[in-house]
Image (cartoon, rainbow, N blue to C red; front, top):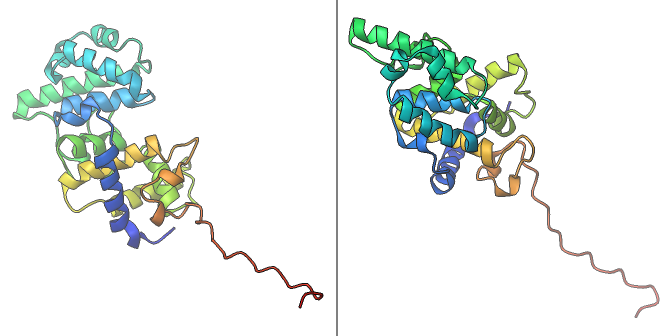
Length: 238
């Protein structure tokens, strides 16, 4: 694994690129944990372009977590129709009921930390990190397919992001390179995901356009420009 001494430069270049090139997505404009959670569940196994329309329609029908909790499971699945992977809708309904039940009992709503969020139905390590950092601006790591690919290529090219043992190492890297504050972590995690979605993709690594190429362990070496060799003098010459 490559040394993480380049992490500050990596963050600086990555965040500057994101501020200039990040897509204008609706879930990036909210800190509502419910709305953030809905977007993260929808984005699992589904392209961003499809999620945008479904996201708006779903929130129009169920504006709050309490609306989902009060709805019949069939109605939640109906609003989810077309996105597939309906276990996500079932998990959202179960989670909404858990959150609202806890709220009635203790005056609370969504947990704020990744560790507490993981106790909710259907919430894994990635989703917990996403909600904690995007909704509550907590200093929490996240690793999805895109982030794992970026971290492996930049810091640990020998790792296989699909191998469970290597995934644990990539989580360790993700935690080690987090910014010091939660507010900066929002930008950091969004930037990592965006780089993996737009530049450092699974099909094509667009290294020439990559903002962190200079610190990437997988970037192809720049071509060496040499002065043209002088033609040898013919023995017959002068």
